[in-house]
Length: 273
Image (cartoon, rainbow, N blue to C red):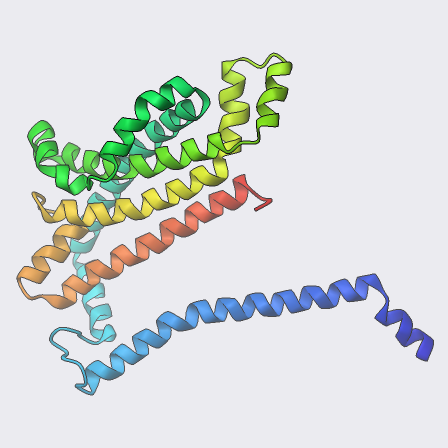
């Protein structure tokens, strides 16, 4: 019997199974913590608002906000705001990410381009895109194009900078090996620069996604008659705070959803990370 126990204790499969169970328990505990924090905040908010410890006019109970959300969804009003905002976000995001990735790869690969564009990027990046909104409105008008361009401008710079950093930090040995095997510019671009810069590039895209959500709210507060930002601003001005909180919850939800989607792509593209 003692010999059997010793064999079990030193059985690599049994040890690995025990380690796997411990990892599963830790993973479930972390998931529980992730879910419990927002639930705790909502319960606390509900309690404080219902008991009058906070002013329910400014902080209505979450259950009433949910009721307002359902009512707005049932009437169809909410879907119009969500649809137009998502269109602006996706269009602006793509318009900022695609040129940002291409320019970032070119700047990372070719030193003359990096030296030519770096001063422009560094000079324009600190300027908030919303500060340029008057100029954007003058050029593109008050229609959809100006809002899309505003989002694209805010997404463009973090994507460019992170992509350049990703290419520049590629181990030099890969470039040398490619040169020795006669790789052409296309090979350098698609087989070395693009996959090699992906980890840092995706971080820039993640940052751009968050900035896009921030920008759309501000852009829709000025010169718009629809969208989630418009809903938040007009509800605030009319002191319809439940409707305002519905808009804030939507922005928070989409931010979390887009982050999960990008992290899913990251796991697919970079399974070793």
